[in-house]
Length: 389
Image (cartoon, rainbow, N blue to C red; front, side, top):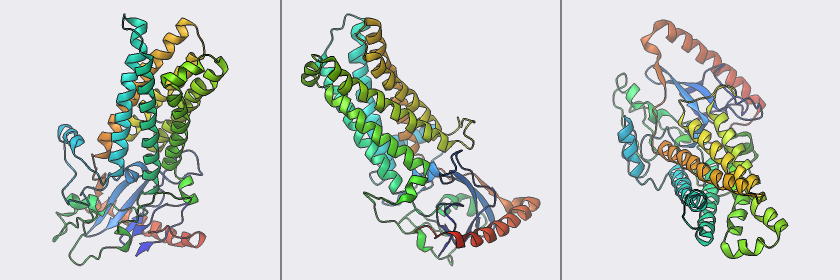
């Protein structure tokens, strides 16, 4: 069974041996959004505090065991994790997101060379090649953005992290045995697997309003809207269409350049939301977070693509030079952000844990907080329905 919690307190169901620590919830500065950070405690052979955050939850980074093959996904060290980039995790929607954005960014880097090199070297212009590469890059971005939304729809309704505690629990709990169906590690032979650890049905489309209270979903939805508008510009970049549009300045601006400005601005908004999701306070950056860096570099890329459209409206040489230059460095920024996102998808984490039994004073404080927090959470259930498990 899961503990029913008010959606305003915590948006996910919790297993019966897990409690929310009172006062540990952190929201992004926009109060309408669900919490992005919280501290949970698990009672299982001791009291263990675990840091939870919404992005790692959505990216399935707490899933340390493959639900298909049963092998351990968690490794230590940069290079072993880097090697994991070449592991095919077809079951992991976040892996597909990182792969597709990386592929799209590579195409845009190629496009950046095609449009910028003629301004700084003797390389001849190739409008046909640059037009088709822009169309392919915009199309890949559009499909990758759809996957972002699907990823947000399919984040677990339950905050499951028992499988992320195996190493910290194995010294104090005997008989730990992994369940490879979903990566959940029961704490003992007698512990029953809670109902909310079952794999959820896959969701291809949803109108559930609860997602609009999650900053991660809103960032993905904004990204999808921006990529869809931006695709118009990519389609108009095909040489046959672009040649026809160039005969009418107003049509060229309205169909080719304006969608770039709007789409690029949408990328900026989406990336900003992702950065805010990774931060504990809206005004304090989180440079130690992979998700924050992914958002930061995508923000730079969004600025570059929006600026490309803004400079492109002018026919002056210096403006055209700046337009192509913005495409060049903006595409590289997107590539960096996409590679980080790919690396993040294949690098599960075990969570920041504190074994409260090692410090008597801390144990007493945490146990007291858990009892108080648990009572408050149970009282909160009268205000709202429990989230679906």
